[in-house]
Image (cartoon, rainbow, N blue to C red):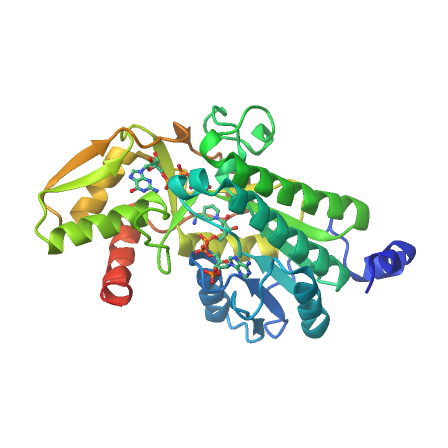
Length: 338
Ligand SMILES: NC(=O)C1=CN([C@@H]2O[C@H](COP(=O)(O)OP(=O)(O)OC[C@H]3O[C@@H](n4cnc5c(N)ncnc54)[C@H](OP(=O)(O)O)[C@@H]3O)[C@@H](O)[C@H]2O)C=CC1
Ligand SMILES: C[C@H]1O[C@H](OP(=O)(O)OP(=O)(O)OC[C@H]2O[C@@H](n3cnc4c(=O)[nH]c(N)nc43)[C@H](O)[C@@H]2O)[C@@H](O)[C@@H](O)C1=O
């Protein structure tokens, strides 16, 4: 279906659903076709596990090598052939502070390409409901804490991830614009820092939690006396286990239909120093921490106000300690020695 056809035919928009209503029919048809983009990643794989545990039987999944989402023609052909009813976009160029700082062009360009292609094709091929995943880095570096949704675009961004943040802000705004102009049910969730099974454990390009888990594990098996940790240890971060995030994304698909993006967080923050001590304890490394202050700290504090999501009836369930124990077990069984 072409955009001009949509513009010319308001009946098609009506068939696509009224975005102002409570869209609580997501959970009712377990045979509905759902495209989870990025299903091999941390978030996408957790969403697939969650949907499968709920009995969904018609998931459409494509790996990066099967479908490169930066290629507009291929994405549109895929949507024309598959016609999914629901789409959850968990494919993106993702990385920690070092990767964001080192590859700014990739972070802005690849993310803009993926999200533009997938959002636009989803609309034009009649997807009933669309969920975009952003990130807490969309907010100003010095936003009020806990950060409310309306802090968006109220101040300068954190320089280490502004390119990624700009792409994510564009994604939110594109969902809002398509919602306004086409009455299309596109929503956005803004997750805090995530961790869990299928995380990226790359030594430099990953996020802090998998990076430290790997470094402490390798130090333990090599009987090293010290482990280097980046920055000063003073920044505060909020962590959410990816299974809680997946639960929240399914909750939003079922219960939320609104213009505003919604924060998704645990509501609990920890200093990087305390996080490092906790990961050290879970891994069982007994040496010392050495702080490399030549590495950037990034945003000093990034706790999101999750009261809107909690007000809808969702709650996180997995504590940081339990989540770390589960993730370390998975890491040892699935990554070490592979
Ligand atoms: N991890 C975190 O702490 C947070 C993540 N998020 C958001 O959650 C979403 C998912 O992140 P996460 O699961 O951590 O990321 P991952 O890197 O674990 O997974 C991303 C997935 O996207 C796929 N992908 C990347 N580029 C392309 C492409 N061109 N075509 C097709 N597939 C592609 C990857 O495939 P391949 O690996 O083969 O390239 C991978 O499966 C992102 O939107 C991210 O911004 C938000 C806040 C925090
Ligand atoms: C999810 C979020 O992720 C990124 O932002 P970030 O929160 O700064 O993420 P991070 O996990 O990489 O670092 C958190 C803190 O931890 C410190 N730190 C210590 N030692 C290591 C270390 O070994 N690796 C890393 N990566 N960080 C370390 C590090 O110096 C920083 O102070 C964004 O780019 C953005 O993409 C985004 O949305």
